Structure formats: C-alpha cells, structure tokens
Length: 352
Image 1 (tube, rainbow, N blue to C red):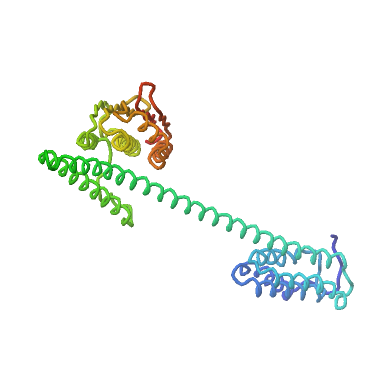
Image 2 (cartoon, rainbow, N blue to C red):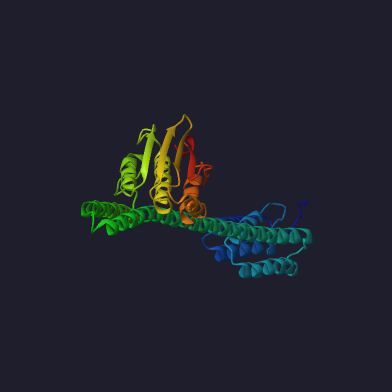
C-alpha cells in the first residue's frame, strides 16, 4: 500500500488517537469489549478525519482485536466484526479523497485478527477441557487402584484368618469330649488367629483414615512376619518347611509385601483345600530378583485340592495382580506327582 496524499496533516490530535487505539491492547484481556470499542472508535476517527494513511496507525486496532478475541464471547465479537466491515467503508462518505485500498486492508486485517483471537481462545478451551478430562481419568484410575489394593488386603487378611479359624474350630469340635487338651490348643489357635485378623484390619482401617503423608499408623507387613505365618499354618495341621535366604527388611517394601502375601495366600489355599498336607516355602534372593515358591503334596484330598485351587477366583487373581504391579511373573499349576505349586519371580530393580 503506497502513500496517499490527503489534505489534513498529521497533528497532535491524530497522534493521540493512534496512542489511545494502541493502549486498548493493554486492557483487552481484562476488559475486552470496552478496549476493542475504544480502539475501533479512535482508528475510525483517525480515518474519517482524513489523516494520512501511509503510516501504521491501524496496528493498535489489530493487536487489540486479537487480544480481545482471545477473551471468548463469540457472539459479541461477531457484532464487532460486522461493525468493522461496515464502518470502514462508510468512511467513504466522510473522507475526501476516498482511499478504498486502505479501508479494505484495515477492515479485513482487523476482522482476521479478531477471528485469530477467537480461534486461539477456542483452542485453549479445548486444551483445558482435555487436560481436565485427563486429570479426572487419572483420579478415577487412582481410586480404582486404591479400591483394588484395599480389596486385596482385606481378602488376604480375612481369607487366611477365617481359614485358620475354620480348621481349628473343626478340630476343637472333634476332640472336645475325648481330648480336651487338644481342644484347648485349637481354641487358643483360634484366639491367636482372630487376634491377628483384628490387628491387621485395624491397620488397614488406620491407613484409610490417614489424610496426610505422615508415617503409617501400623507396621508394614512383610517377610519379617513369615515365621509367625508359618507357625499359624502348622497349628492348622499343615506341616510346613521354610527355606528363606532373603534377609527380611532388605527388600523394597512393595516386593517384600508382595512376597509375603503370595506365601500367605498359597498356604491359606493349602489349609482350605488340602488339610493335613505337607508344604514347603522357598524364598531366594538373586542379584536382580526374588523368587518365591510354595509347593504342597496334596494331602489326602489330592485331586480335589488342586482342582479347587486351579479354579480359585479372588485368591489367585489377587496374586497375579500383586505380581503384575511390581513387574514380576507368576506361575501356578498342579504337580505331576500330586499337589499344587505357586512360583513367583519378583524383580528388585523395578521396585526401587
């Protein structure tokens, strides 16, 4: 666009109009409508009064139009766009000589800036919406994971304790009349199992009540409690051989807990499905992983025990979920000579 010679020379009033029009950009984000209206009025006044159009006097309007457009409110800015494309050509009635190139260039540029601001606002709104959806999805995922963790812990605690209590109660009923001392021993085992269950449940409930990142209210469950677990299973009539070469407390907390829960669930299944069986528990520490193996000989109910555990629902699925959470692998199945085996490989590095 080349210079256009017009009769009215540039003066202080013209400069003030340009300055005020440009100042609208500073206020556009906070007060978009007044800022754009003021900038448009000053630019139109400059144009209508016939001041020179060979300067960049319209840049303030363009900047204000863009920044006002980013504030949203599509309808009112459509009205502004209509006003711009209407009022600039109307200047032909007031301005002499007429500068068609200038009025078209300024009007279309202002509308384009306004549209660009609107597009930027819509893009930002969509991005914010997607970010909010992502945050909500992440929150729901964390809630689901926490529910699953609580369900696994409750299952492990309740299932093991109830199995112990059920077996010992059966023993007590069977020998109460003829061997009262054995009945007393069974009842003491029931009391110990129920006490352990209550303590573990209180620990879980205490964790649920925590509202900050303070230290846990209950000690963490892990391999340091394995001897007590094995002893409770022995009291239920299952002969357990324990081989442990992983020092308790030397493992990452998640691996330590997972190893303990696998052994607990496997031994609980032996008590439930193969009472009177013999079992072995082996825990080995390797440079990169810990291996856990629990085997039993099936006892006097060889076939039904293994079949029942192979089709178990929450127990084996809970084991797999725990192992998967630490990046490990789990294998379960019947042994060729009878009995059942649970074998887990738990990587150490992934949990550290």
